[in-house]
Image (cartoon, rainbow, N blue to C red; front, side, top):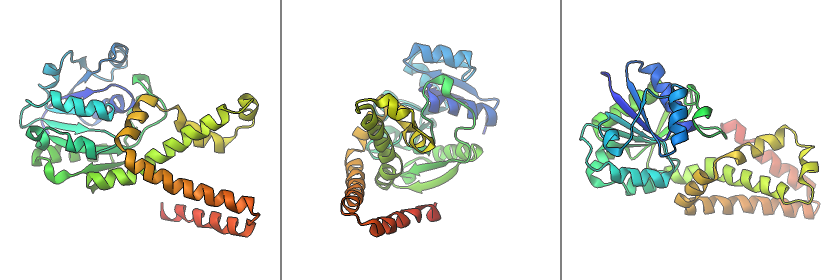
Length: 279
């Protein structure tokens, strides 16, 4: 692809890392940043995540490629700010839910949008958390691609291939149902486990015993409450379905323990071991 101007909207972990990855694979591109958080914009410049900062949506709209690396509600609002972009502009959103984004995209720019979900991240936030290999060898799901323009599809797929990502295709409804189990439910469980310990009489004494298992399960409880409450809101019904499934398994385990059904419990655990034969 010829030299292009790319604007990253949202300069946190996802947006900052996307900018760094772009700089590696397209060194001649001009990478701009746009973020309402002034600390993020100044840090992004200092860290050389971006070449310059856009100061208005009018500037953003002059880009060849626009990356929306912001919470889902903000993505929907941003798409309404982009209704008059060129037919040749590519918009790639990185939202963790897809159906509501796709449904709320103005029809005039639907072909401009490639709805994507890179299945990656860390518990850290902000520009200082960004690193250039965040996307490397990770899965990216592209949704409802039949409604995107040929130019836009080609550009997005080229970028994700250059990032060494594994590309999967599915419809947005299916994506949100699957994401509830594989991403949103684990975050909900992690937040719940952290609060269960913090609500005990002496959480410090409990945490003094914490080992690798507890740390692994609660690591993502450090994730942004603003971002994750937004995701839970956008994927409410799918998340509730996954929580119901999870609660049934917890209740099943609780009954077996209460009734001293240790052999049954062992068989139940063995069935869970099979998960990693699939992964």
